[in-house]
Image (cartoon, rainbow, N blue to C red; front, top):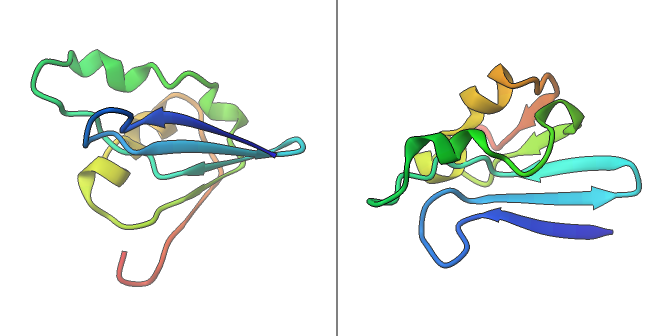
Amino acid sequence: MKLTIHGAARQVTGSMHLLQVGQYKILIDCGLDYEKDHNVMVNEDFGFRPEEIDVVILTHAHIDHSGNLPTLVRLGFNGQILCTPPT
């Protein structure tokens, strides 16, 4: 098992964590990074290949946890997105 932090490190926005269990890849949150001094293009640089993600689990629907899902899909993700009914 391996956990890699891809967002919200040393900042508030852009929560994104990749959990790899064997060959299975689970993305926990896919947040939009909208920090004041960041270029919006940073949201297209995931640090992994979106088409290789098997499933996304959303902890909640705030934009800093879910706002980059459209980009993830546009760049090749086609798996399930799991969340609670309120989300």
